[in-house]
Length: 206
Ligand code: GRF
Image 1 (tube, rainbow, N blue to C red):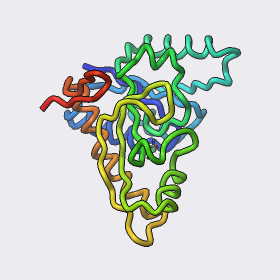
Image 2: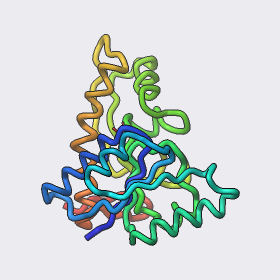
Image 3: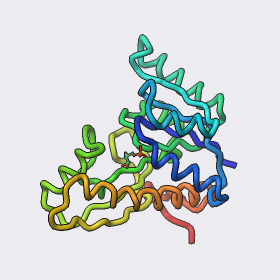
Image 4: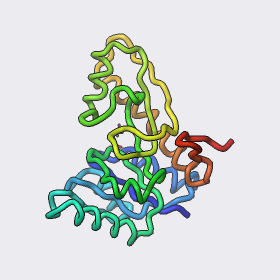
């Protein structure tokens, strides 16, 4: 049984979608903790209702980067975490944590990377940039995390059409609906050992 740590900064709807997948038996895993850079994000309320431990961990709480990294690695080790899910987490994962969990950290992004990603591209800003650019298709990307924002081997992408007259408010929920279906599918496949990385590229086992 895989042990998952979810990192999230806000609402937590993707965390909830994965939790639902676990409860329904579609994902062979357990979410052992939720970690946030914010003190009281809404995602913590969902976690607490489900008796999942929450931890507020922010770089600013530590005098230096090594302490911060050491704390994070110890925390993850204490839960025997073997998969980290970034579900609306706004901070960069420190390089030593990426190194320790290479190809075991998964992020979800509400656009088709490598476009509309990187530092500062989160939430409504992503959808606004998509609409302003005039592209006709956006979507969802789920990928392994490397040392950079919104980079790393792509696991899956799905398109969502941008409709005439779309605003960030009308586009965001259509993208989110896809996220809520796709993320539990990916986590389920990962936990079943059906997602492999060969020469830096993701290969799905049929
Ligand atoms: C999602 O759109 C996800 O793609 C992005 O942040 C948002 C998080 O939403 N990384 P939620 O907190 O899961 O509701």
